[in-house]
Length: 375
Image (cartoon, rainbow, N blue to C red; front, side, top):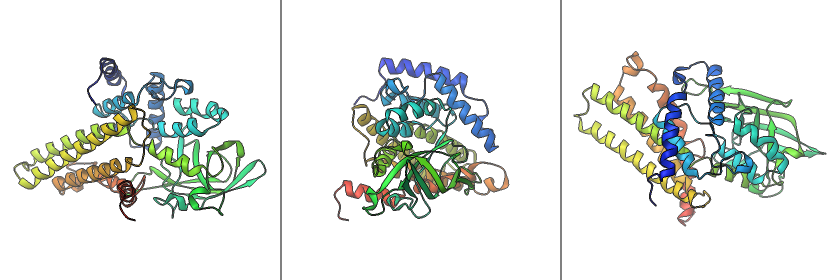
């Protein structure tokens, strides 16, 4: 495959780059107040939507532009290169709704999801069902024309700001665990929903635990058929990665350049070990980039994302954690004494990358099955 832009893609990239240069909010990455940061994310979402840059690869009938995933990748790359605020993550949730939802659900939920008017979170993981998601214990029992939900979800990113939640709950305890799960679209304002932010090692409360106590959910808000939750979850997770990783690579390269400059300022580039670590960081980034463009090529050719996304997850975690570790090695005590700031928080933020979204051990098991290795 030729990875160079077509004339149409090159023209789109040039227009987009100019638009981003004019519209990226100044000082967005210096905002420390969580509430202000949440407002900025919503405003940025609306700005992108109004310019036509949200959901570009969605079908036209659901508010998209019907473009290939390449255009989403270009957006992510340019946004990463220009240090734009994080792009709204609507693609994977939208994919689940317009793949499994009823026409009424599509009309109700997709327009506001795309525009950013309504914010969503993902109620999948639980205290004892993270990577082993099929072991979840939150229940949804049918009671007339409602389901009654009880349980707890953990590591719900952005739950304190979300209006709605895509929730997995067990509806049939008598069948094998993968087959007894259903998916629901639930308002976070329903009585019985309690959200408690969790402060992680970086000092930020970017994730939450959510308690569900006798929460009544209309049958009409079940997504798909009863017992189809696992299949819906796998579709959601599969589309969670892909073009967005291109943006991570651009951010990774910027960070690597900063780390190299810090090493130069401290006279460390003559040290063989430092040069070796920087070279390895560059190679890790290139390996991840090539893996991402391979997946993007498959997506553009019409292939559905599959378990090979586990390879990208492992490469991403290794690259990010290694780079942040290298930054701390180069900084030494400067981060703690105030000569430099922000790097310790970034280091702590990188540590759970190999756990959330499926731990490294789970990803390796998936890859082993792909290769036909013995269990």
